[in-house]
Length: 416
Ligand SMILES: Cc1cc2nc3c(=O)[nH]c(=O)nc-3n(C[C@H](O)[C@H](O)[C@H](O)COP(=O)(O)OP(=O)(O)OC[C@H]3O[C@@H](n4cnc5c(N)ncnc54)[C@H](O)[C@@H]3O)c2cc1C
Image (cartoon, rainbow, N blue to C red; front, side, top):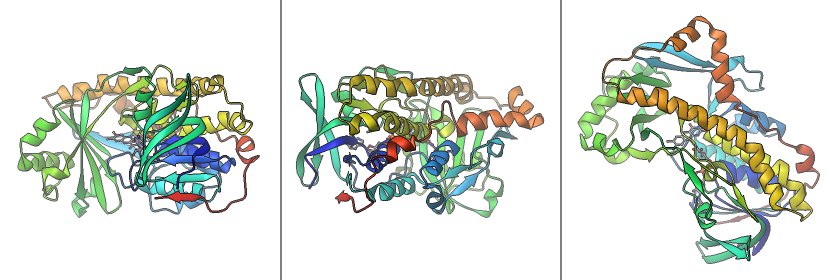
């Protein structure tokens, strides 16, 4: 049974929602996380945990357990432009405890955070529980209506957090204004088996008119083919053989026969947007629900987690003392606005100045001068490593605020 009341109810068991849920539960608050799916097995999202997130895990004492999970450590981001191998980022130049990006399927990370949060008695995770609407009392939002496996439910709370992703139901229900920045590309998402001929595989390969990203998942490659916005269905309409040939050419391998059917190729629509105001009395949006990120740089998970940390840092005490005001919620937006804007501005610049011309090009491409300069002056590779690996204004966990109200570790509720 779901509780009828909590200090905080969070819609969405993604990176933002589960991190915020963990932190509030650790702080001794009653928190309910609603996740509409029955499990975390979503194959079509990001796979990267960045040095700044691992720094936060270290502050929380969770890093060792996290690094014990199967993962790949990527110390350099390398790609090929028009056949020329380029190293874009060198994460070993960072001064963080982990000088690499950890590649780990997102469901592993989410299961890990949920397991950590379950140790605290105030934590409830409800799977197959979809937030469908807000509960209001005059101007104030005082809870969430949910559709659960055992029927409709209503949970009242001092704070509702919308962490339900870029198609957020709750931000729509709250009528918050979204600014859409557009994106020139969509992504076709599929798997390739590992083969001995992949020895020289790189993270990304860019050629005139197309680009392929290959994420290492130990026993297979999770691949993303970038195509012009709106053209994904046309690419699929050319048929399976044409698709296999295109992928095999880009991946520099003899065939891509393991793509058994075009039904195995998922189209992901890329969106970049941001709410003008992230909050209303009693409601705060974080993560993709506040700002959908482009997959460029793979920083969406990191930003979502940083939002959750800032939220817990700034709201734990007002929530504990039951004096939460809209001014407190505005402080979270103020804190996270600059990193969000700066990251999106950079992503939009890369989308418009690099991805768009690449996807429009029909002639062979050459690496730009800046990429060549980075090969000659390797210290320059530390700059993108910092931007991607740490980001703008990284958050540190306010352990004093979180741990002063910590309750004894016990068994949390797990509603399935
Ligand atoms: C193709 C693609 C590739 C990407 N690659 C990367 C990458 O490599 N690295 C990276 O850092 N980022 C990547 N991103 C971005 C990243 O996935 C997101 O920015 C990040 O997951 C946002 O986290 P979140 O918790 O805010 O939202 P989400 O991850 O979207 O989580 C939202 C959760 O809420 C649940 N939910 C939705 N609606 C409801 C509801 N009404 N009630 C209850 N639950 C609900 C969903 O099931 C989901 O579990 C990629 C994005 C795309 C599209």
